Image (cartoon, rainbow, N blue to C red; front, side, top):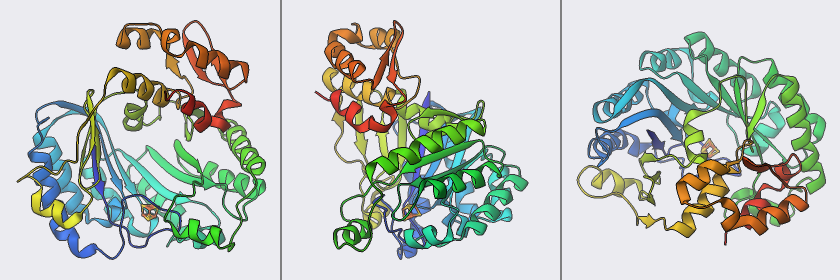
Amino acid sequence: MLGLYVHIPFCRHKCLYCDFPSYSGLERYLEGYVPALCRDIAASPYAGQKADTIYIGGGTPSILSAKDVGDILLQLRQTFEVTADAEITIEANPESLDGEKAAAYVSYGINRLSLGIQSFSDRMLSFLGRIHTAKEGERALRAAWDAGIHNLSLDLMYGLPGQTVSDVMEDVQRLGDLPVDHASIYSLIVEDGTPLKHGLSKGLWTLPEDEAVEAMGQAIHDQMHGLGFHHYEISSYAKGPFESKHNSKYWTYEPYIGFGVSAHSFDGTARWANMANIPRYIQKAGRDSVEGERVLIDDKRAVEDYCFLALRRRVGIDKGDYARRFGRPIEADFGSVIDGLAAQGLLEATKERVRLSDKGLSYGNYVFGKFIR
Ligand code: SF4
């Protein structure tokens, strides 16, 4: 079944580390963007298909008025057969979410909210260029809960300049006091072209050593387990059944269709991204193609993508599923790679599965790279 993604590329302020397709100071396009999105959705060649997840991401979707969000969801339901039990997620940032908006989300059928908190340290939040305090983050989360959204996720970051293991543990402790059942906890990635990269290259800040970042990751893993979360994907923790169904589609090679600028899609045979230019998108959506070039996924690319994505999950690669999809055992393609990584202690291979070991969790990119031929 399809997953549907909607991209909202607007933010009130651009964070120091962010290279996502999101822009501040372009709110003048908001008025035209939502009708364009609705035209884009209505014109989808996949119209009429069943969808069991919707994810409104960004950027900052909560920057939209509640009515705009309602219009987008209405259009999705009119165009697709959205199942009655679909997981419907919206991303929000604390400065643009209050109880009234959260209650409107509930009335539109939104049943999951992912809040970009990133840190419970006001010093770190200010360094990162976030425009909310830790208290405002907690307030927004509780407002969503009180409004009736009881599948709540929050984002945290670690490996930040000046951060210590005990800072990170303090963050996880604060998370544990909140009504969240899912958390995405990311190690900072320094992306080209960001002010963070520029400042680091000028010596304005220093990143923690690799060993310290590894120790933070391990401390988070242990503490989250202590709080009753299981570590189901390299950066994702959930309690009980609260794993993200939408994100799991990305990791299990399921199809998803994206709407809005820069939104990515995968229909099982090809991948593509929409154009990034907001005014051009507004002009063309629903009238002309807004897609970039489609990249057909040949067999070589398919097995690489499949392994790379499946290994992000702690359950790893299901060897039976691999053989059914590709008509041969995984060992025929990656036998020596798996043996080599297992010998290094980074992978665990059983008769049924291949998965990252606990040690391999800290070397994910190295392991994934070995599956790209
Ligand atoms: S709020 Fe999120 S998307 Fe927007 S600039 Fe910050 S990190 Fe990027």
